[in-house]
Length: 178
Image (cartoon, rainbow, N blue to C red; front, side, top):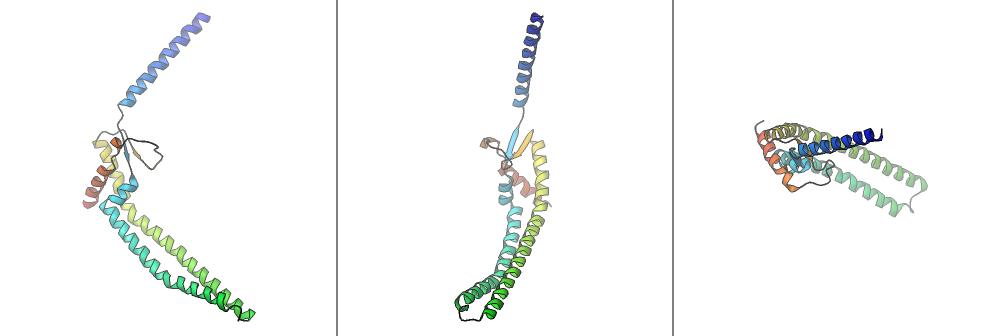
């Protein structure tokens, strides 16, 4: 009985060793590439154009709110300086007016943030769609088994497997063809 267990244990050990060796050999045949999607978007022609549109809209919104923000600062300063000379009723009216304008500006700011997010999504959607096709085609054409985004949880990778710059060129070509 002990002899059978020893033989079964030995056979199991040999089987495990051969499976590990086979998996290691199989893994050695894998070709893995790493890309930085953020860098691709920032460095591609279409990504730069989308960023310009986004930045322009952000500047427009900021300049639109600048006057209202200054008005709030001026109102607060006036309340601080003159409140001791005002009647209690006047103070309350001025404070309520200030709070109302601050809430209105906050609502406008929230709407502007939503508008910017929508614009960003609209501008990036076609680029990301094209990038998806570019990455898939690049991976198949170059025999990659796995392509990873370096910002998606990859802790370490050799620069030799970084294909980001190649994908920027491929994306530029794909977007120019559209």
